[in-house]
Image 1: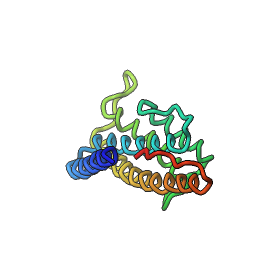
Image 2: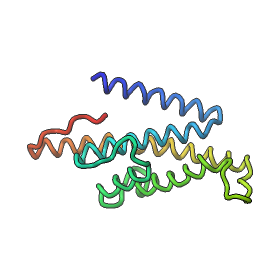
Image 3: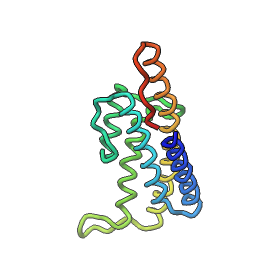
Image 4: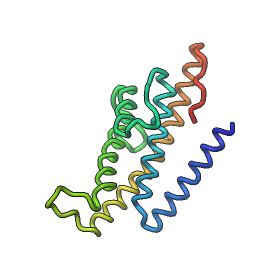
Length: 162
């Protein structure tokens, strides 16, 4: 149980930081923490349903998303998200732009203007927080359903991947 308590406390701290950073305009921190939450939940799901998966904490975000979507054979409906997998992957691409775009550009090409870029980072942060909540909720529901299905077929339940 200590593992679950520690995980709970780390998530509580992450969400406290997401809320504080959003309020203070530290959108890059929000984006980074949201990616961490989403990656963690995807890794937990992937390893929870596919014991043969080689996914690890070092697996790139794009690969986790791809493996997650492949396990589910396409669309991942959730609440008002038409396809949660597609939305997370689109956000991943925007996240890459935000994380690298403030100062990085092709040689000889100017960077984006700072204020419009910060506005874009704010929107990416807010979308990331929404998606982190969605993926966390989806994970909780789907992994629970998977374990219940295993129990009903007589296969031993998967150990918790918190």
